[in-house]
Image (cartoon, rainbow, N blue to C red):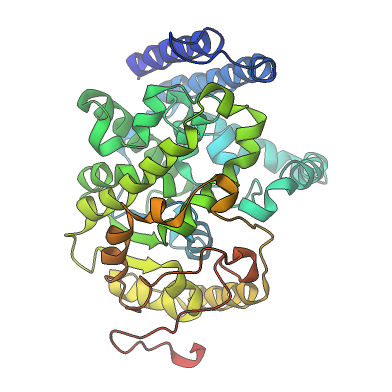
Length: 426
């Protein structure tokens, strides 16, 4: 742990230097970018320093977390913007599972921090929740702008890749640090990350999961959702040989503009294109690796360990799909969980996304995007137990805001490969 701390500290110093003094051949940062980063880097360093203090205190007071076994974890992977968030939040209603929440990811990756905040929360509740009400107000206003792209609240289930922030291995950091080779290698993890560094990062992530279970209940099954972990699929399968996987898929020509649109505010805020003009091209190349790596790493897993589901199939009838996914993976679905699924399905039926985008607005063409990953997507989509039509194309001009899952309102008819029994919910 100490070695990883100094390695991360050295990386942060190097990133800070290169933020203001680019390497030869790199463009100089704009005045806007330099101003933003002058405020961001000290705040980021302070928060990560607090996290490292928490990790140190864990080793003194809570070393028992290291004995916690991560048994048969359930990973929701896939390409970005393919329905992973929706699926994650539905599955998180299963009380037999435990998953990271936003506040744990961002403010309490250590056991020490969680104990502190949970204890403070109990005290606050006894005196009428003055701090709780203040936090409610702050999160309503602070996160409101994200609602159209990725609704977020402190208590919501969230991607645990945020727990990798202290070791500078959370891919979203590519927005403030687009020149970082380490972060771009995170997007090509199974292929390009040096073996020794890959092992250290997987050790750190494993410890994060153990800490979570130590606090939330060692007897529970860990649920993890990370679209950004598609490039880590092989490493996850090797580290957790008894893991189950649900892989969400979506057409490349719909995924990429949706991803770029979701990142647009961050790209503008950090003035990313002034530092890395080829940022969009690198994301396009990386997306192709996501599809290929999922096929390579998980393509040979037996059906009882890996479910492939397209966004269209999930959208067509989530109340039916979820029990079938559970059945295929051999997971028990309680009556309470089935009721929660039905509620989520009803809410999805009335939701209309305000997130609109197109390939053209980013200067991209469908042919360029689909040429490389398109055939891989078709092969993976064909693995879905529910539809053989999901590999068919969606009109590139369709507005994803016209339907609950961010797809065109013109749906492809679903043809079941085998009978699906959903009881009274179908």
